[in-house]
Length: 459
Image (cartoon, rainbow, N blue to C red):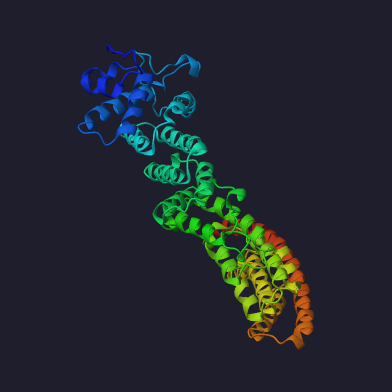
């Protein structure tokens, strides 16, 4: 396209492009950028929407060309013609290379204002650009444009980027990039609408977060050390579509992350019992295979908050799933004076239940004992073990109510005795299992022998 340049100053690209709508596609990359900058300085301009749309369409087309296969970014110019579109979803490797080559082009777009960037991003979505590339562009724009922006401009830029990211596929958005925006947003007094969108996106990607991401200082002085309420909102968003909609792998990953976070938050003397319990119980039991990490964090919390009443301690301990505590932790809890006596008894009952599950079923034992083909004598010790287990259960029921301080030492001594009996019962269970294995082998052999002899007796 011919450009009639004025000798007295730079060419007026806005006027030239309005007079040559059909020839806009022939503008160079630099000329397109200058035209767009003139648009953003003069908007709203009468009858300029068509020209602007054509400029944006041509610009986005050049961005697509930046994703073409090339040995290095410097050899790929957006001004080149005859280069095919190749920004597709065919492979992860091609996507990485495509994103790398597009970054240098994004540098030229940093000068555009948020309104034009919004138009560019939406045009990229309509052209079915990969959402990873679009999100990379938006993160790059946000980081680069904030350097010299005023306070109000920073807020406008951040809100625009957040709004555009919210429209993309959640799996295409970098969790690290979102936390980077969150650090800026906390100082910009963003509107609640955009802040909720940002927190929601972080919640969606919670399985990609790290402990350092979550250790955000509390915005309120004199409150907790970390912003616990913010983390709880993240988790609410993570579980927003229901537990059944979250893959178990992601659920377990977030649970492991939360165990680390709870351990970091536990020593905070200003962390209220209700908030601590909320952190423990916000995820379902199915998210954790073991509650040992929660127990250790709870042990630290009760040590720091020794002033809690017995009732408050019991309430805090209600977040434990005693069935998912290891034998070592159950033993430790039973002797841990920081925990209420009721919790110590619950730990022993839980261990008893596990040991009871190890014992062979009564019907199976009776079947092998009464079998006419079995020639192995069984030493019946199950009755003695059941009697010991019964004593533990009865004792636990007697301790169902709160215990006075005067009887604390006696109760602890009794609990230690119970623990010793549980160890003995566990040994007996192992011996019983060994015996039952031998019995089952012998029974099979004897049954097989009897089955072959029956026809002879009946003949």
